[in-house]
Image (cartoon, rainbow, N blue to C red; front, side):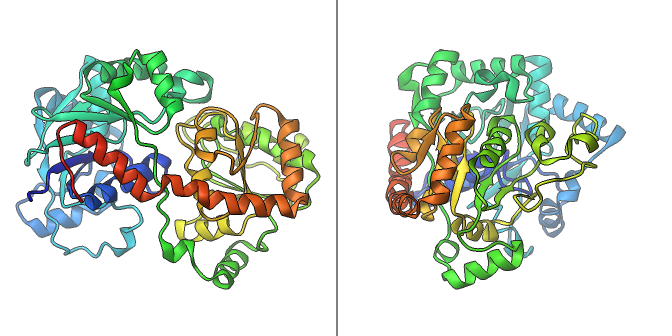
Length: 451
């Protein structure tokens, strides 16, 4: 049987640190391969414009090739917009294992073919902003279907284009994101009108899109996401995982609470810290994640009131040059590689994830899969994911959060019960269930997959 070629985009796959959308795209690529598709991935990487396939492959995997600044950046932006307006053909990336990619395994998707258009996603966003039209990209190989993993203003002519809209947070919580709301709304409305189909990751997001974008129910499929933690990490011998947590972070197994994710208003870290301090727990709270927009406000309780020097607002806004208090009670980790993050989650007393709004909420699913007790929000998609395997709280009610943290801190039987329920709930979102949902959706769109 000839394997159908399904294309996906690499919009988020070039990021150095993981995101939920990057995890979705990467896992989608592996599941497509598992159900019998040939997978092509469209990047926006730059590579050498030469005939030599060795140099082309080498420069594709060199991130410095895509780093431009100043006049050259502006010049390339103009060229990119003009190219896309006229229509552009993607370049094949020659991949013959000349580059040792082992160090990139955690970020790379599964692929059979790679294509690239230099600066594609940046240029497409600019093109849509200026001309109010989607970029048209031709692929060297005609896919049976193009599955965009993010709402990008691009389409592949001559094939079905389906788009994943993970959530509509910029419209539901406009005060919690930096997106240009008018531009974002116009783009989502355009996708809603022109997409051959729309994919989303929860019933909550589906309801939002029907309400805010006018999408008909039959044009949306909820695939959810799948938990996909390698067994070598998830089932690593506990003594080894304990040693990693102690050696890397100085933390005792089972003796700390954990939040991980971006530190931004939507994640509700400020209220979480307030609730944790009110809970009376002597176990430290570990916050692991990069500091994004307005992080200084979310972390304000951690710094001395009389010695607070805020970093200027702007693209690099943060909490630099401040004097920390509560160093032993609230521990900030900017980043943990995934191999260590899995052990950090396994060793936590509980995951605390009171996000204001999530399209899916992957950290909740990952923690439950690993048997870690979870406290999360009773809003958006989080009750769908958590079911009855977590403590659900109002994310705006710090007293309710404090009481839940206190219960997790004191009640070993409660923690044991949640630890037992978590893996059973997470099994509803395993790879087999996800592959079935994908196969059924693609079948309705005329792409038969039999793997």
